[in-house]
Image (tube, rainbow, N blue to C red; front, side):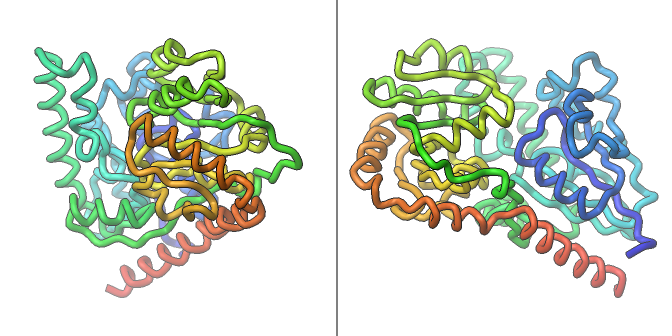
Length: 373
């Protein structure tokens, strides 16, 4: 392995969310050069990547591209294909959008850790087009054309990957359906050791999430406006922040973005975590369980692989206000049956050390097979 040259490629380094935690763990195993579309220098200098050899695309030269990179979606395919990685033997991509589309040759091995096929081009296509500004008119036509192009490019570039690793069984099924490819499931790393079971809890529910449409935070806030006797704390930032603030009543605290220590404090003290999205994996669900607190969540996606109904949480089966209210009511009836220690033990299945061991084993085996060809 000493003579093998490895390159890492990640969509963008503009925040430190779940996919960046995966990249961090991969970088700890393979401290190789990192290629990415754009980066936020402020984020990088306070992260595990502060000393990394990071290469950005031509999009970085666009003023404030690290803030508005999503508007540059039509340029992603061209930008990612401009990276010349021909000097490397192995390419490891961490991809939610464009990273897997990097060009490689027959003498290189490309391993992709796929967080998801491009959400807004496939599963969330019709949801995004229901946004008020995209329902009709010229913007709607342009959006449909761009997403059609991205969908074709995304499918085509799946053939550039030699080996897919999926972050959940749910994503593995989507990779099979959309790309027609098999994949190995390795659950992402969660910093479970960072969280603790609080000695005393407070009487509030909590939501921690990016405030974007598919996360369905608005539904949770609406549900709690109909339960004025129950307190809800919402932590996170995003385009839906203003809309959520306008519908929140006095029993709901919208705290916006908070540093990790503040988020950790509120999470450990909460009585339960509420989650209404159909998520590919759902790192926040595992983080909540590592605090020993139950989760009340939508019964679809990665949640079915991380939450045990009536043992570590409660499932509801429809993404609507009524279902959330009913789930909270049912939770309070059986609240005393939840064991914080058992809940935390369930979360420990997704530790960072476990991820690193499984990922290295998978890559080393594929590399061995590749070199024997």
